[in-house]
Image (cartoon, rainbow, N blue to C red; front, side, top):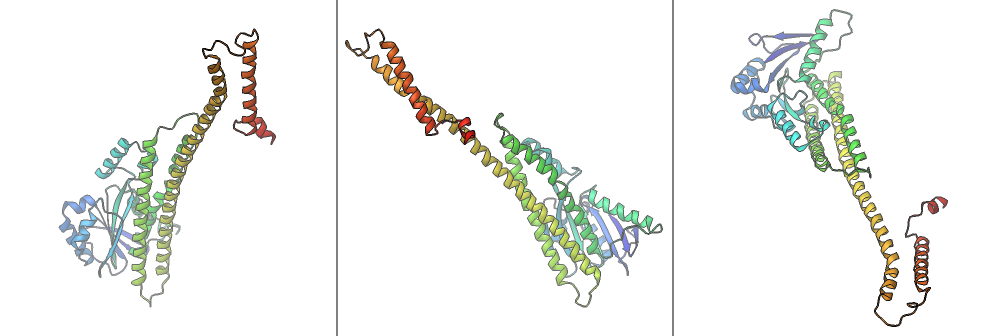
Length: 369
């Protein structure tokens, strides 16, 4: 468990024995699922010792539940947010299980990146508690960036501003997590475009139906995931607005709402993109089957024309194949050629009629009109 004290333009890493609730600034208590799960009650006692806030048992269970959806809840002392982020390192057992399942289901690489893990935020008056998977790139990146800002604060003064409130730090972390979903839009769109071209290619049959179905399932999961994230952020926004002190009109509170609205807008963009991709898959499949039906119709029309051409010829040959003693043209020396000429004439007349009624494709005729 790592404990940081963030105050104005300074950030310091505290030891567990000396960490206490500061009179100025706030504490950031960061832990992993493994650290909390090793001794859940001892970890809660340590957090209570540093912050003076008692975490309830159901929230402790939610904090180490790797399958927990995005969620918001609040008490008189703290608010809890569970947010599912992308698992970029693939180090957890859950992610490995999802990846093995993806291999069996033949999901393309762009969609296997949709494996997620929960990050729990416990927002208190002067502290922020985060619980996440080990080796979380997002948390490590934000932590490293803030420590670098501390090192540059005595330099040129171009270092970025440290968060002044625990809510601001939480929103920075959430914004970085949502941006990971935005980065997936291009590879997902590229994969769907490749499938769309393959579906509409008449020269090669499309046989990757299982992967296409699995892709639709994954996009539907992303759709539900974004809806849960958006609902949690909306409840968080209501919580911040309801607990806003009317006498406090500071710029920092307005900035919090702006940051939160930006996070919600990014989630909505990801949600809309997932819905568009799902709609694109459905449209491509419908166009594919429409093209197949059109091709089948063209084949059946050709076969029908051939059958219609040979029907009168079959009738004529059937008549002359009858076993009668006397038949017209049967003993005439020109009878064979007269019969063949009559059959050819019938074929020419039928072809003329079919073309006039546009039963046959005539590209030159269509180009001329």
